[in-house]
Length: 108
Image (cartoon, helix red, strand yellow):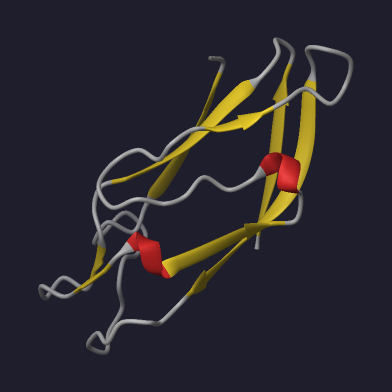
């Protein structure tokens, strides 16, 4: 579970996720980010759909305080769907084997 806090004072916020490519084990085997299932404890702060080697479609988060202020929290959870056969090993990692996902919040 990853705790998420999003705050803004200028209306809707676009949230995207960017990856460098499929998770790999350093030996030529890969796991697609489509195998990573993500859920949010708050549907108003949804998790962007992870893609392999690119930036996801933006999720629009709308104001919940007045007409311009976004102040939302959620817990994002991630799980491996395990629907493909892959070799044993560690896939991804801290800053290696495409193990990093970068989330970006921006004002459209």
